[in-house]
Length: 197
Image 1 (cartoon, rainbow, N blue to C red):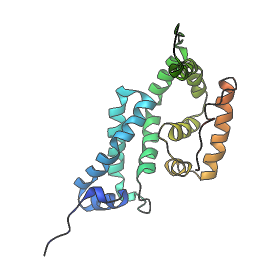
Image 2 (image 1 turned 180 degrees about the vertical axis):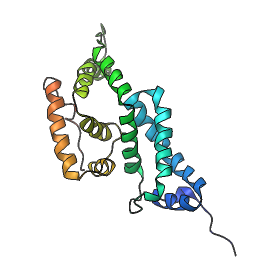
Image 3 (image 1 turned 60 degrees about the horizontal axis):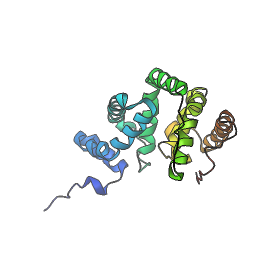
Image 4 (image 1 turned 90 degrees about the horizontal axis):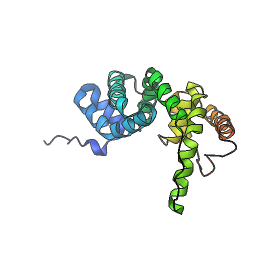
């Protein structure tokens, strides 16, 4: 009798986590699948110098807590982003220093530029004001904004990651848009965003 072949690429995250309970080495497939994404998120939140550490911490916490994973979630991304958000909170001092430094940076306008670079220049000019606006947000507001904007989570996945109802995500994002728009002098950085949530 031939045994069933284990092919991690064909299994959803929940099944991989379930298999890792009896064979811990199988958890490596979950790491391989999501580590780059979590690393990018950590790098954007805290800078590249801490991203490796944060990614390692996220997967260590996930590995240790895998028995408590809600197996009704086939996609582990919201769970991993929830862990990442908590690990980032532990590194928040470094994030605050970095964001404060970005807010102090003045952007010099180039002498000439073509139409393709106009958007980039505008974004660079807004960066210090946006960084100042981010420092004025509460930790929970900043976490939600960056999960949706940088990690590209849906409203539902952000709600799962943060452990709050989807209605809370919607209302918080509405208030965040108002705060950020006010801080940017009426410019709406979310104008082209369209999410079904």
